[in-house]
Amino acid sequence: MREMIKIDVVSSYDSTRIRNGRGKTRGKGLEKMKKAQGRKMKIEIPVGKGRPTKPDQSAKLSNELGIIARNFLLLPNKWKELTREDKDAALIRCHERFEINLDEHYVKDSCEDILKNRSRQWRYKLKQLFENARSEEEARKIEVPELTPENWNRFCDMWINPEHKKRCDINKANRTKLKCNHFMGSKAFVAARAEHGKTNPEGVEPDRIEFYKHTHYTSEKGWSSLEAETHYNNMTDLKDLYTLGESSMTIDEIVDTILGTKSGYIKGLGSGPKPNTTRSTQRRTAELEDSLKKAKQEAVSAQLELQN
Image (cartoon, rainbow, N blue to C red):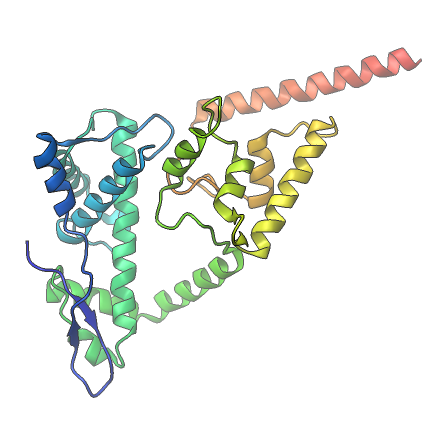
């Protein structure tokens, strides 16, 4: 595989300067591991987790799918523009590198989700490269080893579009308002939560409130931000109300109330686990809510009768 380089645009008078850096991941560590063990690395993704719970598996799978996204996957403006054939071709390459059961739908969906995220990250890095140029003319002269000149110019056309800039400014403003840093670095939250659960005498993973504190607070640095501390205090306050019987909220409901909800994403647990939004689940949830309301009404009626 050709050597990866980091491109740095320095001024409007200088041509594009190539600077040697750490370089992009090339999967050499995975090859060495395969030779040492005599077999491909096994990847296990438990149902509902969306990522491997073992840190080494999570890191290697993410790195390898990042390589596939950069070098073998057509880079779209939006993920939904990719065809089923494009996605399957990328997953075949993943299967060649790992011992992984892609016949299981949740394993396949999880790999596609990681591939989608790595593709978006790669597109974001390319956009930063474009924006670092002093002019549009200089930006179009940049050579990206993984892209053809036609594809690079296609992205340049999109990034200079006023409508695209407007949407990006709105999204950036929204992210700034909701930003809340954590201390997990690049470690997958799913793996971090499973690892933290092993320290529990009962071997049970922490609930979402406990895990939120684990990811946003350390004894050395304190809270990652004032917003994180406020969120945690609000969660514990609601939990105390639930314990005292003044509320009937579950832990998940408490966290969703404080952090908010997002389609296809469970806040506080990283980009792995997905909320169950099937119609059968929604119908069952509605039935349970109706039953709960009915039970409350019956309890109130019974209490009034006793008082009378």
